[in-house]
Length: 115
Image 1 (cartoon, rainbow, N blue to C red):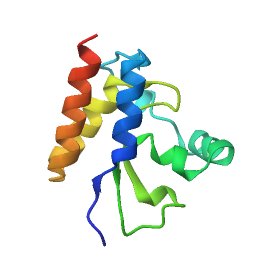
Image 2 (image 1 turned 90 degrees about the horizontal axis):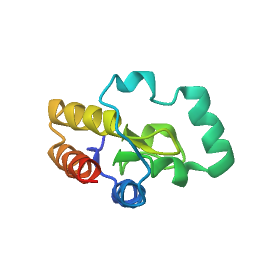
Image 3 (image 1 turned 135 degrees about the vertical axis):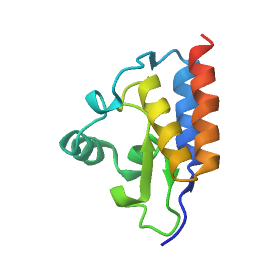
Image 4 (image 1 turned 30 degrees about the horizontal axis):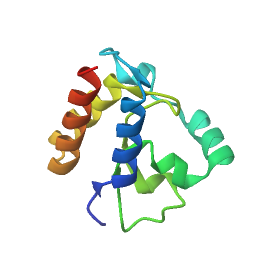
């Protein structure tokens, strides 16, 4: 199994959304707003896996990019960045020793909070 690395496309997408003001400042339970499987499937059907991947901070370079399994550490609801998603990504990445992803999530959270 390949190591999960920082998904630069996801980071740039998140940064662009934050700079455009597309941020929901919620520090509540990410599970309450994290898109479910049916919502993700509908998004993929409309926009494809590349667009789906841009909503994640992690990527497994050894996985097929045309599968959900290639992407991890989601941060938004396919419309806006959620600070609860960035917090969850930061915490989970730190727990699983994905230091680069934890660092990027922390930086994006600081950017989102600076507006």
